[in-house]
Length: 318
Image 1: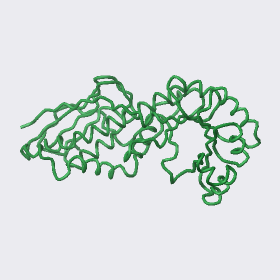
Image 2: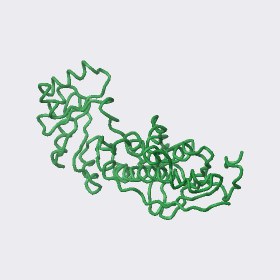
Image 3: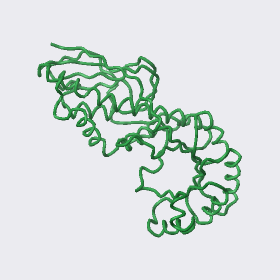
Image 4: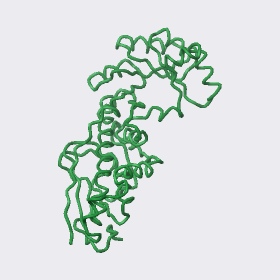
């Protein structure tokens, strides 16, 4: 069957890779290990719908200047090296505007690409291509930037038995999309939100009457939930261990402090997982991983996003 849904537009190019059913993570995979299939978020279509609505509003006034039967095609290239992420969002952006738009991907989700590489080509009604262009590229450039950042951090500690986590410091409205991009890039998700995990911080501890009381209450109310306690010193770490939490978030510890925390935890009858957090950079992450912590959370992956530079080039049919 032809890739082109609009039968009036003859195929202007040789098809690229058309396998768009699987989205894979390429980063931080040890040699010989299988890539991780990353399912698209369940709210993808609604996220795209909202993004289109805020851009189009009551209608695309400029696209209305173009004859309704005018056809076109366009190609998207990247101006810089990146990890590609956002294919299903791009597909949804064009197809929600007009299902007749044909999309031909030349790269896979999670692929590493270089500057000036062709990513995809689209063809169909000119109005639809122009109306959906910005929303599609916004998703692709932001999610590719997130995946690229996750890839850089994850690759730096891939040989050290330590997992890189994201945080809740995401762009408002793009939580699930960015969490998806982190996994495509080879990182791992911390809790998605306040509803799927318990993280007891200083203010919670004070209000609940201490670490032991807070953990006990968490177990009582949500017995199946993972319970994590943020600690700022070794005394609090020992309290978290004694309270039988699942994870201790060792926040802003020095390298020497992290090594001591690891030693204290390993000596416990029931050790916890240790998560290091606070001011983690690409320059410091290997030294942090070398202390023996199990997890390192990096807020910069999702909050310090610099969009990947993309270019969409158009051609017009008659």
